[in-house]
Length: 275
Image 1 (cartoon, rainbow, N blue to C red):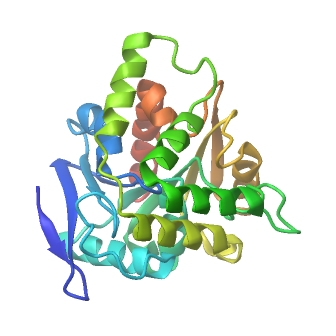
Image 2 (image 1 turned 135 degrees about the vertical axis):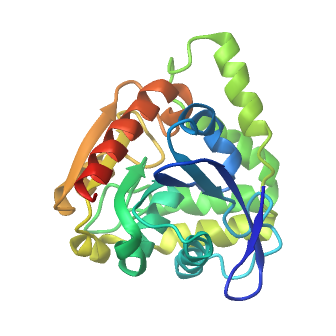
């Protein structure tokens, strides 16, 4: 799979498979394109799938400076221009969903639609937005990463799934193996990205979104709260919300078939609309 050079001359990695309508997947904090394995395995027969390793993450560790949303969005625009993608569906999970929101203004003419997965406009709570994590919790995550990133990520992985969400032991082992195969960013990059998450507020961007938006969330997500997805659905005018019952933060792994079917239906609908 290839590398591309962004506008700064930095090399960033992306996965690219299949052909047809392009779906571009953005992973979350301290993850990589590896997490979309169950989408690449099922959807590449129908769509072109592209999934970058965000700067500082995965194989893109060499571009670790400026891990903020403006820089993430610029890298995304550079990749889309490099591949000359148009009428694409942009799928962002967790931090990737915030990057998608940040990118909308500069990419709207390239997009057929947005899919926001386990998303929130504000990762941390504010006086006028109580649907984020308490600031103390975000600060605690910062300290844990600083002390021992591997142990911090093991705890984070455990919190991504609701009790009883993965009932089959073999399935649990496969998901654990997949997550364990993600090469984590170095400590500095992880903290920089986390601090960007903690400080970001995407609410002013929501009223500008005119593309059709599919919002997907688990009703037992304790990382990006379900109420945050409800907020997005109320403030993005052309959106629809689908809830994955009994699921936490990463249901595209635990309910891959259902998730993939939602993507297939949505992409078919918005691309027909834009034909």
